[in-house]
Length: 161
Image (cartoon, rainbow, N blue to C red; front, side):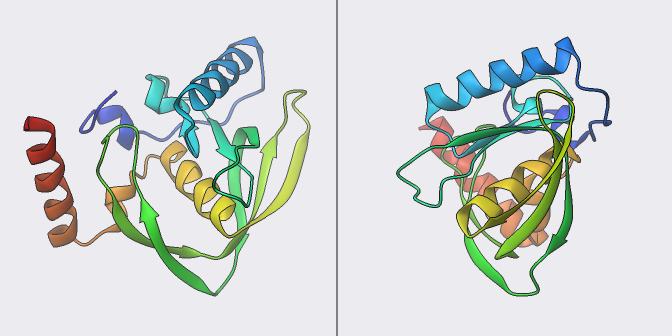
């Protein structure tokens, strides 16, 4: 689905890990692997569901995917860093986003058991980006109106070429 689809701004409600969520998780994992993506949220495939796939590898050249059901951010570092972010919903668009350098995340695994994990560096950025998307926050929402408009204008121009 491409920006500006209204589902990108919808918050997914937590729910029990059932066959439906597991199917979404498997589809997301396959799509992330096929695209060699850093991460994907279910909404990118049209489902407003609390499922994300992230690459937990600290080396950007590698992909070690983890499927997170009902993910939530527990705590984050006070230290932040800017880094490039984009979305499969806006192919080719990118913006510098400031995020904490680490995050403690809670999520359900495939068995529905609650887990917690600390992600640092790039995996933290990916997890925070995808968890925000589950909560209806598109990466452009973190930019000033002027910067957001510039990214959208550049993206539309590139898409038209």
